[in-house]
Image 1 (cartoon, rainbow, N blue to C red):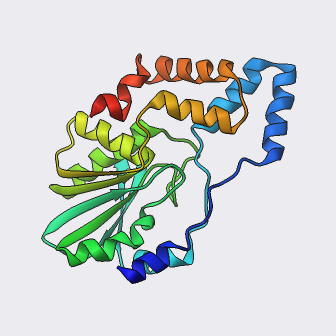
Image 2 (cartoon, rainbow, N blue to C red):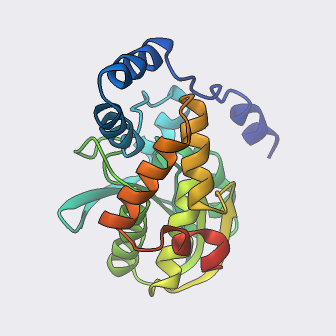
Length: 226
């Protein structure tokens, strides 16, 4: 456990929104609110690609790698260990399955094999944009592919997806949620706050979600699904 704590302490700081992008949005807004809102909405669905850190490479190299279909998209599975029980891990926004590198040896030691899911448009999976419901679909596709899931560990937006996957049929024995948002509307609010945007953009994104995905977006929130 001490080794894991030492490794985990090297985590990179939270990503900061580039000032150049904030200026770009301001310029778009000067000409047209709808133009700026369309750009912001696209950004809301676009994860930031980060280079895989060296600390995660041994986990990747020691895992069995599989690609599974998720509708018209794909997810990548890294299976580590060969225990009699199965633990599935899914990352948060802009993350990757190999972030399970520190958890995996501990779980293997407890008798699990670990299946780490990299969601659509993350890691080496194709595509630039995705959303929470595709995370949920990736979890359900994983369940169909591997069978019984004894424990599901889910981080951040992956945690919100886990609640929705379980609520719509994914069977898991134990569910462990790490730092998931409790409200979809809070996610929108935080996103707009980071980009220094006013309430018009919050309402625009909410309307977009309810028009294209679910008529009551807050019904998908973990606090409601729970």
